[in-house]
Each structure stands twice: as C-alpha cells, then as structure tokens.
Image 1: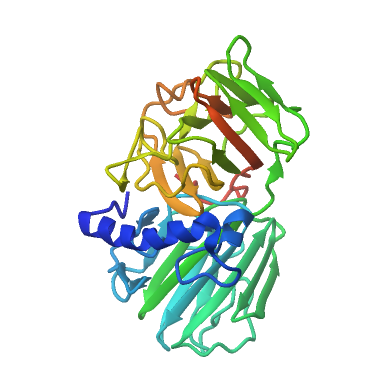
Image 2: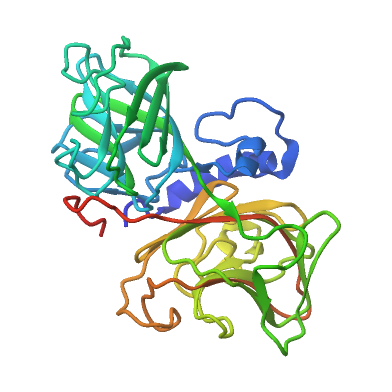
Length: 410
C-alpha cells in the first residue's frame, strides 16, 4: 500500500489536524473549505477527502512516476505513462478537485477505471476526463475517444473541476462552466479514481468525492428492517429526534438486508468518554458479532491522536488501526465505509483513516479469512457502559463492472 506515514508526516498531519478537528467540531462558518479540507456542511452531506493534503494514503501508483507531495498538492512531472489510483472503488458519485497543468501537459482524470487503463474508449476499461492543450484531439474537459468539448481552457493556472457520474450519465464542469455531457448506453458500473501522468507537469489538490444513490437503511421512526439479537442486555430504541439509540451491552442489532460490495454512511454520537462500539459488515446473518468490524473508540494515548486506544474509530478492528483519531466524544461525527472485493476503506468526518486489503484465504467467517459474500450490517452494543446515538444511516450496493471486455478491478 502506498503512503504509510513516516514520523515527519505524522507531525505535519497533527499540526494541521489540530485546526481541522476544531473545525469539525461545528465551529466552522458556512463557506468554502480551505484546500484539502471539508466544511462542516460537506461532512454532513457525505463528502469525503480522497487526498488528505499530507500523504498519498489511500492511493497506489501503477507505473514508475515521480509522484510526490508539494505544498499541499499531488505532483508529477516525469516517468512512465500511468495512473496514481485510489485503493477504493466507487460507482455513482460527484468528484471535485483542483488541477494545474503546464500549457503543453497531457494528463487526465480517470473515472471508474481499472487499476491500469490502456483503452478509455467506448468498449474500454475506464472513462478519461482529459487535461490537454487545445490542439489535442480531446482538449481539456473532453472525454477521451467519446466526446470532444468545444470549451477553451487556459492552462497554467489552477482550475476547479466537478464531474458527476451517475449510471451512464457523465457531466463535467471547469471553473463553473459546463464543458461535458455524455451518455454511455453500456456503462461501466464502478471503478477507481485515477490521476494520470502522460506528458508534462501536473498538480492536483482538494480531491473530494460524494457517493450518490445511497438509500436510508433506518427510517427514523421505528426499527423496521432491523433484527435485535435476542437474549442480550443491550437496548435499542428510537428517540423523539429520529435517532437510533443503543444502551447497555453486550448486544447487536442487524439489518435484514445484506450487502456485499457497498458504500455505507452514518452519523454517530458517543454519549460518554472513550466508550466502545462498532459497525460490523458482511456479517453472518443471525450470528453474534461475526463480521468485519469498523471500530468506534475515540480514545487516544498520552494526548497523541496518532496513538489510538483499542485500534481507534475507523479502524478495521484487529486488522488495521486508525492512523489518527479524528472524531470526538459527545459530538456528532460521520463515518463512510467502502467495501469492494478484498479492499476496505474508512473515512471519519470525511478524513481517510483506514485502507486495508484482506489478503487472507477465503472463509465464510470474516474473523477467520477473506469474505466477499454479502452479509448483514450490525450495530454493536459493547458493554454496560454503552450509550450511543446513530442517524443518517444510508447505504448502496455497488454495481458490477458490467462490460464483458473490461478488466477486472483486482
């Protein structure tokens, strides 16, 4: 995995995070976020940072390129043509980022891509939102081999890009102007986000994404669609504010619906200090705590948010600790979990904290090995101190790749 923190990177992150956590606590005023940050409104709306501004955590290079971090941007200028791509995969989404390219640069933003994409055409392995000079067959804002834009983009400055990918619809804007609208009758269902080096220097920052199409899995009125595991002391109820509350423990409540590859987003509030809970997924239906667990535990040691207690909020429990504790007790925070094949990624308040690929041998029980089969989602009641609230629980099952000619993702 690319981008594991060194000591100096942790120090730089924590200096930044000290401000960011303060902003996430609800003190941020409405308006645009600083580069590589989210506003409190964006966090509540479900936006996540694909680039933390400090490292390449959550990204993987697929060719030999001088990818590096400079002044809060991902930069490349030389090497073999190829992609820096996310470990996570996405289906429908809105992607926003800023880029700056030299006037002769040829680069691109790859959408629903396989780890490597040599054919972005109508039967290919990805979509490429091009970054290229006006004399290129597909200048900046075009969809390579699919649609040429007539918009004129002056390269050399920072540009804001927004791309919406929903089903077969792909729409793009540069600096607030519509530059692209395309419909693919046989669309790719999902894939990675990729940044390309082809020729010339290119820089990317403020890379953030909002998953689309999620549907509520908790109605805010009752526990319909959920099953409480019997014979345990945890109590699950719905508050007058439409939140799910769990007190006492041990216990679990699980969805009747099962999810395999999915995006899950939810809000959590811990009504105590360093209480323990978790979100289990791909769980064995009807069995107790038998799934992957995304930990909820906001404690950290010796005042150091990079040293979590008991793996920490956002961890894949017993597999990969959270690299930093972003969330605070007694405050609402938001979690995004993306599970696709063996790769599990978690964001807390939109910040990437975990990216883990399960390389174990397949097993029906995720405690023993790799499970990609669908399973239930479980909210854990951990022990007698448990007191948590949950709201805005939404999920979507990720579609398959669809095109028979497309490369598999992993």
